[in-house]
Length: 557
Image 1 (cartoon, rainbow, N blue to C red):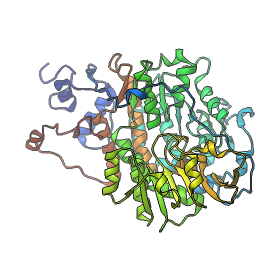
Image 2: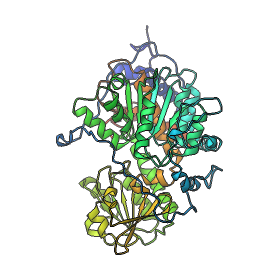
Image 3: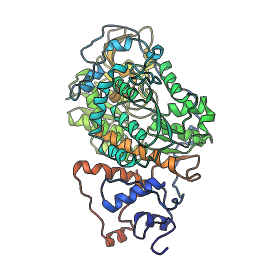
Image 4: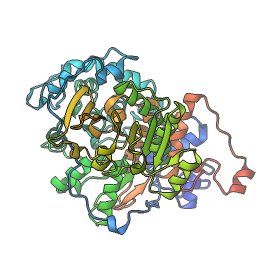
């Protein structure tokens, strides 16, 4: 028909141009959203079917893992057993109190709640008789619902996606098993996925980051949630197993944060793993594990690397950590930052955010880095580049954010001065060698929730926060707006993988297409009443760009 192309789209539209150029990467739902945005330059989202499917030309993610590191990680994530009731506990500031003081009347979860034991043996049901969940206390559901409602006010793009798309149900038939931090922001994502047609079962990716009231609200709403704050290692893996192992229910999509859920299904339920349509992973740790599987030829599922998307790296990793590092330190220690000597291990996006925040409050910031490019950035940003061993005797605060293991070892801990604070801003609890501190000659004294004094025989003590787990989500909260960006990216990645025709995505790890990154950013611009400048035809021709994007190449990070 005149005026259309092989995609059945009208001449002059974004879809027409993409199909004409043979580089359309997206599913029908994603293509239509992009076309609607390009037409109206607004956040209105319309889901309608295209006449034919888009072509299946997809750019694969480059692999940068050295060949020497291609060994498949077989061991579980390293978890440290929590110390027993040692020393005096303070009830003056619990985590949930800190996270809700300003905005809601959520109940406080004092340290005593950590000693109540596991809820695994309790029989719990919500008001409708649903009992397929395991949380701390279903009675906290009303408070958790208020937290979720507050989060929705800052997650406008994700809520808009839910309202506009729920009629079409682009995730109808999807059975998503998730393992992420269970917070109010994640609850908005889970409820959005359900509104788009998905069935969801969820566990926590961190033993300290679950907001118990939010988990209760999700359980009351009928979601199968298995998580509570202060899980043991055994509880952690039990919760993941309960999400996956349900008679008559088999997941076909995975949303992971850290790779533990993917690892569990791959090792324990290989028959389930082979039938999964796609994996969406948001953390550097989890992405690294996916690349290991791919290099070893054992990844039999297409996976989307959300961690390296621009909307994750330049917003969540940078801006979220820039604000939450101070929040976490203040709530746990009441520290005065001015004049303090700090060393930040790692100058990636997380490290950049931490350093910027600390510098603004008058700290003297030192940086350690292995990458010459990031090291040069640190130097040109005005920070002193050092080795940890050179400054560890004099610094007041040590912060890790590398994604590596054993960055702070016992040899460093032994040399720290009295009162030095040690914490981790990376996803995994492996960056600080906490296991080396669990010896007979050292005394652990719990002084606050998530705050331990480790005392040496000579009386020296260091302050360890969250037992080496992720500081901001274990000890405070994170900015909701930034998490909306990441959650919207995750939702679109799930829609794309689930609706993609067979064969478009092979058994490999893929980067998020740049057009999708730009679309997520555009959805959030209306919060600022921002107005994008549009290229003229002559300018677009000069730059060899489509007027509607993408404006950066796929390799741009």
